[in-house]
Length: 568
Image 1 (cartoon, rainbow, N blue to C red):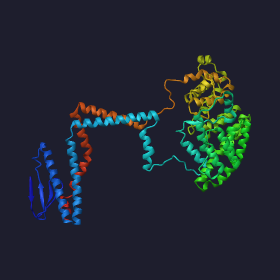
Image 2: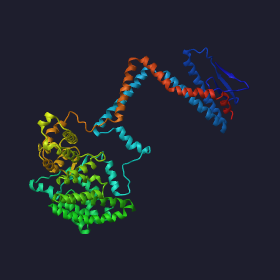
Image 3: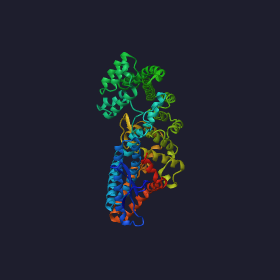
């Protein structure tokens, strides 16, 4: 029922049964009441009543706004904004309720089916990306792009006080991502690799391997300030040259200008035809490198450029001392080489990226100092450093050495394995799990070739590099190769358990979401009425807190408050 009320005591109720109307012709406020008897309202008339009620409300708001804009008073506009905002929110809640009540089962089928299709496509893409790149696309995007926007800390660049600490931090951060490593026992190009070329006429190194070495040289032996020094500027270009003769000529040109340590390094690596000549050149490089290191050490805190130069000089000095120790090892001065390596590891303990401990292990095995080998393994065979074939198979060799001289397959099959033998077999199995290519080279089932300058962890290249230098140590331990021959094949099984790669969370999440939405779509299609009831019940429960808040607001605020706001 619609009635115009002209009483002297006007009122306004926001609960839904009364509202204001402005009579613009007489410039006074009338009250339009929309009333209905709750007792006479039937269930089938509720939808029509609310449609009529919302239309009246919308007309009221429009008239209120147009009338108050004609008056142009600031207070009235504020009152209109407050009242109109509350009524708009109130109408929106009723509109949402009406929309949810009019949804059909076909809508729920379409909704769940579309959700299942989208989540299935996301699942397929996530699985493909994980199989190809080994990581989750959503997780990678979240960490790389969303985390910095949300204020996350980017740990990609180390910030330490000294260059050694910075290099160690950056090397630790890239440990989990690095797969191709520089061979710590790599040969000399001029004195060793070129001999193969002289005899066979073939290149011992691939272009890919030499390109990786060129990148390493540019990373370790150059810095941003090289253009300020003529000799370093020449060497910066020399490391990029593909032609070996062009590199050697550039190194001689740099030495004509100054005592350049990196020029001596290049000549020792590529021009020297014997280890003795290479050692002489490295000693000259050491003299020049130590002078540059001391000067840059004093200036490293004066700016970023000086710090980068000191980091470069540190890398050059460590490389020179390591190669000098390797020269001493190749010339038969093994104890001297061990002392040089130990001193180098004490002087630069954080530079684990050069893997000097693997050079030390090989030299100690040559001396048959097995107690010292065990001490080095106890220090470096932990989770802080990546595993390697040298560490795993050296640990297996030490365990096998304790039982290999008395080991017999027939006796072991009759009486069973002892505790020491079980430990040795388990150590061999762990080593074979890490790199299954090594036993065939140690047992000479495959022919050896010259090791490359870079190796792939757990790959055939690492097996070649390990067996090339360590086969003699296995042969020196009596019965070690026999024990390896009897036990290494037992390591193989259908699927390797190392390492166990877990599925990313987002693949599991999208798989669960796809399955759940597909099940809802199937159930809604088969039982539309029942699922419609469940959906309405779920949505009603979801919006129950909002309805509860609205009821509390209507019960607490007096109806005359809104009328007073309109008269401000």
